[in-house]
Length: 242
Ligand SMILES: C[S@@+](CC[C@H](N)C(=O)[O-])C[C@H]1O[C@@H](n2cnc3c(N)ncnc32)[C@H](O)[C@@H]1O
Image (cartoon, rainbow, N blue to C red; front, side, top):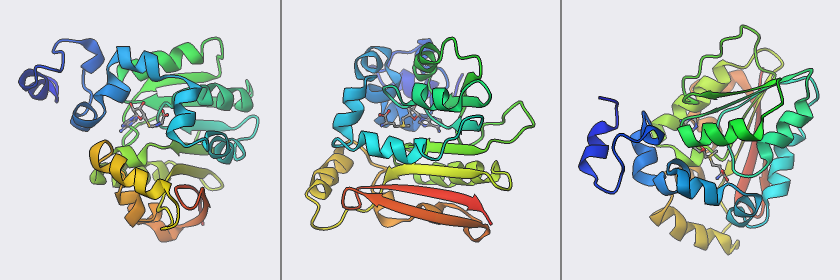
């Protein structure tokens, strides 16, 4: 029996014996089935306009914050799939002299990633948990990016992902975390997100209270550069080994 079989058996709204649900963690089934697991919904949602709407039209500048750190020929690991064309843009920027590896934890996101990156043989799409992905190659990554993953995972998983990502950074490599931050009191979106977080995103509020460096058990061994966007609603944190 896989880890979520009991949940699937006990909740008639979730389809048992469906390969799209195999080994998907409980927090994804409990909270994000509609957004990231159910293949019918994912097909509807995987578009640039969805990302644009979710990010209050800040999608391009937040993607640029990541893309600006990417150079041709780099080895890049993106820890989770993102809707729309972000993965294709990063893969193209890295180009055939580099490598772009995309991981995700759900089967349907892997399918979408494979479709988007088809024909780019310097890319790989791997089903793995960002908290314990073990790359086959010995060669380290130059850049590892988490784009809006941390706010979607439970507290303990945040620690595991941040530590795992930082643990994979070689000397000179960098990690880029783009995610929600703590919006200023005057930012009206703050009050919209309070409601959204309460009903749809139960793990997101923690990023209002904690800096991302809080989730690194050995934070002092790294340098942390944080930029905020849209009155603090979003942040990009670039981390390097000291
Ligand atoms: C990057 S986040 C949010 C991105 C953004 N909201 C968007 O527009 O797509 C969503 C992805 O994280 C994946 N995910 C959730 N937990 C994960 C984990 N522990 N390891 C890897 N991927 C994970 C989900 O399957 C989903 O594809």
